[in-house]
Image (cartoon, rainbow, N blue to C red; front, side, top):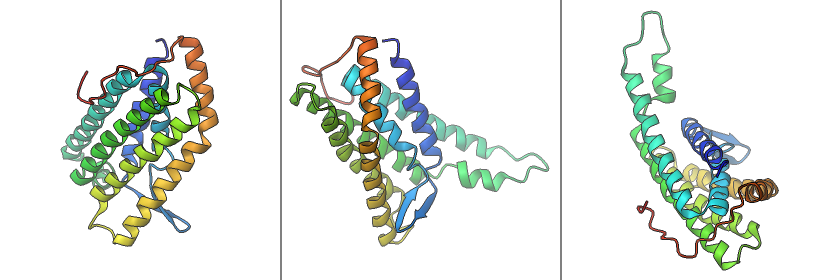
Length: 218
């Protein structure tokens, strides 16, 4: 599995970047998004690739790697924020505002990611067996509909309920969810190419016939 570490590294890197910029909300016409909207869906694309090529059990390890990476990143940001600013350095408030740990956002992000990614991996693995490995697009889009739905609802609700008006909260959920599903659909040709390349080069096309889908089993 010579490309497994590369795919896994991209997955975790995208995840950490997207969670760093997810605290910002911005509007685009009538829609409201988090700052991670253009980056985070990529993690689901690579999550799909991991399950499709290497199987659920390998994907499970990388999801947990991402989970602990998020926790570690948050702790480091928090500890650095506690350090006294040097004389003449006037960006302490800006650092805390952007990278400072907001417990509610961190919890929302971690819970949304964990539940969403495992939902995505489970649905894709099951659909692959059900379709006998045919019609990849049904798996990538179908798993995204479930995984991104769960992730978007949990993150937005836990992170922003009571902070922003309910109408804005609902708009953010719907806007983010629709965009992510469309994003996945548009990226389907690229997903096909990467999956085809990896299956050919790796000589792997895993089916989870007898896999335990317990997310806590390693």
